[in-house]
Every structure is written in C-alpha cells, then in structure tokens.
Amino acid sequence: MTPDEPAHPNQFALMKQRRFAPFFWTQFLGAGNDNLFKFAFTVMVTYQIQVAWLEPKMAGLVIGALFILPFLLFSATSGQLTDKYDKTRVIRFVKWLEIAIMVLAAYGFWVVSVPVLLACVFLMGLHSTLFGPVKFAYLPQHLNERELTGGNGMVEMGTFVAILLGQVAGGLLVAIPDVGRHYVAFGCVGVALIGRAVAQAIPASPSTDPALRINWNPVTETWRNLLLARQNIVVFRSLLGISWMWFFGAVFLAQFPSFAKDVLQGDEQVASLLLVVFSIGIGTGSLLCEVLSKRHVEIGLVPLGAIGMSVFAVDLYFAARGLPPSAILGLREFVALPAHWRVMADLALLSLFAGLYSVPMYALIQLRSQPSHRARIIAANNILNALFMIVSSIGVGALLAANFTIPQVFLITGLLNAVVAFYIFMLVPEYLLRFVAFMVTRLVYRFKVRGDEHIPVSGAALLVCNHVSFIDAVLLMAASPRPIRFIMDHRIFAMPVLGWFFRLAKAIPIASQREDPATYEQAFVRARQVLRDGDLLCIFPEGALTRDGELGEFKGGVMKLLETDPVPVIPLALQNLWGSYFSRVDGAAMRKPFRRGLFSSVGLVAGAAVPPVEVTPTLLRDRVAQLLAT
View 1: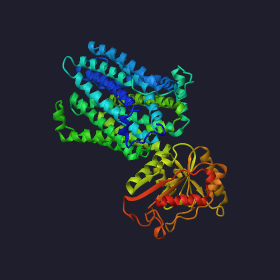
View 2: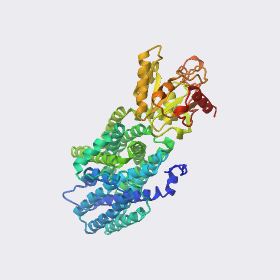
View 3: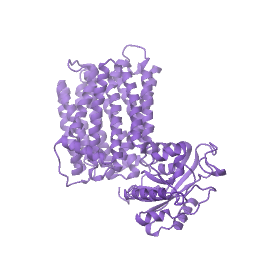
View 4: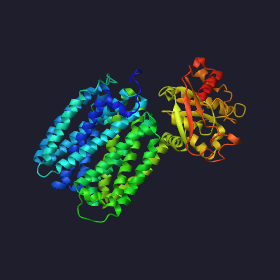
C-alpha cells in the first residue's frame, strides 16, 4: 500500500480492491478445487469401490501423505522462483498447470483408475507447493502492517470456506449413483478454468531478488532455506509453531470420513457436515483475529488459540466415547440426537481457536522476514509443514494399527498440543508476554490506544512515557506491534510475579548512579545495544512511579542515550491509570484489589516523533503533558 492510499475500516473493505480481491478469489478457487478432487476421491475409495491394496480406513492418510510429499521435495525450489520472478507470473503459470492436472484427473474419475488419481494427488500437491510461497509473500508486498492481520484472516477464512465448499461438493457429487464421478470430473476442470481467468486480474508483483541464481538441487536448497529461516530465531520458532498446527489439523481432517463412519455411524453426508462445522469454525476464528487484535499483528492470540485447541480436542474424546451403536445414520437422523451436538460444538470451537492460533503467526513471519528472501522463508515453512504432516500421518497410522480408537487419537493429539505449545512459548517468551498483555487490556481494563501510527513498525526508536503504575510496561507492550525493551528500576525485579515477568521480557535493570554505579553503567551499555540492533527501547524519564498522580520532572537519561545513538524519540502518555490497583494512590500499590472494578477505562496516546537534535528533557515533558491533556 502506498502512503497516499486511504486507510480502510476493516478487512472486508479489501475485497473491493484489485490489489487483494483477484488474488483472494484465485486462492479460493485453487483451494476449493484441491479439496473437491481429494475429498471426492477419498469418499470413492472409502464408500464405493474396493481396492485390495488401499484399505478404506487408511485411504485418507495415504492421500494426505501423497499430497504433501511435493511440499517436502520442491518447496525450496518454489521459494526461489517466487523471490526471483514476478509473483503474478508465477501464479498464472500455476493456474495453467492446474488445468492440465485436472484434465488428467477427469480421465481418472471417468475410468475409475485409482493409480491415475493417486498420481493426480501428487501433482496437485506439486501445484500447491508452487503456489504456497506466492500466497504468503504476495500479501506483505501489497498490504501494510495494519492490514496484514486482516488480510491473512481473510485468506485463511477463504481457504477454509473453499475447503468446506470443495469437500462438500466433492462428497455430494461423488455420492450421486452411477454418474457422480463424471460430475466430479467436469467440476474439477471447470473450477480450474475459472481460476485461471480470475488470475489474469491480479496486479503485477515485482521480483524482490531478480539477481537470485536458482539452485535446482532440492536437498541442498532445502537445507539452505532452513538455515536462512534460523537466522531470525523468533521467525524460525514461529515456523515450528505453525508446522505443529498443521500436524494437529491433519490428524482431524484425515480422519473425518472414518470418524463419521466408524465412530458416529454416519453416512457420507455426515462426514461432509463435520467438514462444514470445522471449516466454519476456523474461518470464524480467522476473521476474529483482526477484531481482537485491533488491526495490528497481535501474537498474544496464539497462546489463547493453543489453550482452546487442547481443551476442545480433549472434550471431543469424551463426547465421542459414549455414543451408543446404531445403524448408519443419515444427516437428519444424526442431527436429531442431542449427543451429536456436543461433538459438533467441540469441532467448531477447536477449529475456531486454531484460527486464532495460526493467523497471527503467519502475519508475524511475513512482517519480520526480510523482503528479499521472504518467499524462501515461507518455503522453509512449507518444508517444515510437510515434515510435520508426514510425521502426523505416520503417527496416526501407527496408533490405529496398534488398535487405538479414533477418539483416543484425538485425545492424545489434544494433550500433545498442550505440551508442545507450552514448550514453544517458553522458547519464544514474546508469545506469552503478549498473551498476558492481551488479557490485561481486555479483561482488567478497557484499553484504548490513539496515535499508534506514530509507533514505528521498523527501525530503532526511543519511547518515553509517564510512569503511573506497575503495569505501565504491560500496557505499552499491548499497544506496540513490535517487542519493546524497557529500562526499569532494579527493585521491581525482586517482586514475586512482576519480577519474573519483566525478566522474561528482558527488561534492563537500572539503579541510580549513587546507589550502584556498575548497574547504572551496564544499563546504558545494554540499552545502546538495543538501539543499535534496530529495536524499540522504552524509558520512563521520571525515574520512579508518581506518588501523587502528577507528571514529575524528566531526568537526563534520554540525553545520555542520544549522545551516542541519535534515534527518533516517541512521546507517549498513559491516561486514567492513577487510582487503579497498580498505582500508588493512598500511598502504596497493589493493596486493594478491584479498587475500580473490572473493565475500567484507561488509554494510551502516542505523539509524533521528535528528531534527536531537538530533544531536551523539558521539551519531552511538555509533549507528554500535552498528550495527557488530550
């Protein structure tokens, strides 16, 4: 987005713009066609034909594994192609390839050739492998930071609605007696043709690294991409988090036909209903991300999503465990039983929280990856996704072969998710810190931010703010799209809970020069390194919490930092925190819980950056005072 383009009120407004809408519909049609084809094929070998070497209960796993194998083999090459060439050209080539594959698949359905259809599953996996890096590298090239979460939410929602429609259409069409597979053949080719026509309207997306030399060796390039991704540890560990989500989702998606047939005693329409519920849930969760994140990249949603995924995966086991045996149920009979509504509620909420988990992670990777090799980072993500999904297929197959039931597989997956999520959040504490900040600003306070466009999304900057309460830093974390390092009084680190929290946030302890000269000097050494690394640093120039609610004198620490590192200074003002539980009203903080009740209104106002050459403590204090008065 160029600076002169207007801001848009929400993610749905993007659907009226050429920079987003044609891309959205191209992605939508491609995902729909993938799943129309795959689900029709899965239902056909599960319910309609007998293949001695492909058991019905293993069909979903085999088809899923074969589809994702190209991601493992060719993602590294596709990432290079996307960085080297115009992304729009790559998209149009991929759509031509889809048409050719679907013509071959139509022949396979027509003559009921399982080997031909399995070959097409692999080729459609190749098609999706080529499109994957384009899908996520295109968005940050056309959307700004405030649009990125909403744009990703729309694409994620669209993907799963397309999955829903494709799988429902595939299941319903292939179930038509005698001629169902013929309708599937026509449908696959028709959707591919429409997708290519829509792709023609996608605007140019210039190469980000035209001088790149393609390494056609997938093994060495895969290793190179993984090393490239590891250069940014937060991005790399976020890739692992997304890959785990695909492991988790693959367990459920691959087992829906067998779960519907063998556990719920439902027919093909019941299997389709489960997919409807799952897709609506993840689409809803994806769309909620922009609302809950207030149009920023809010990774505090990720732990919330992980908690919900585990809770409802475990409850799905209990909901499905006690169902009485019955004859095969049609859709009407299935929904008439109250016990089945708990199963559907668990699936809907499990997938909703999966949407909350995945969208912020994708947005974070897009925002923090270097543009020149962003597509190769996404390719590394696809490689890891493929590895995790293959392991998922193997693991689930082993559990089923060991006579575990499908509900037991869901239970194990839900418990594993809790363990893995906790491990990831300990490795990358930023997720946990943002989660705490997210919960505080939604459940303890009604937090309103104004002027947040002044908080830079890239580059070093120094933030200065009035100091009202022990929770000031948490509120500032919630307001910034990027991590902030804080310089804080060393005594706060001795407090039981807040001390642990701020150590996790890598806050920099400082003491007065008179009290502890070594700590004082070390604080400035560490602070300067933060600025030199291009990050955000926050200092409370008053030096201590206000004891009367008034703005105190600003000390000279800011000037000491600017002498060696002249960076822009952003004035901030926290409003209406005086009198809250965490402030020193009546002499001491944190003595009277619920002093102002829950959801009390507080705010943050950010002002325009002050050039370093103009900064003085008096000027900064005046700017903060002006913001407090607005």
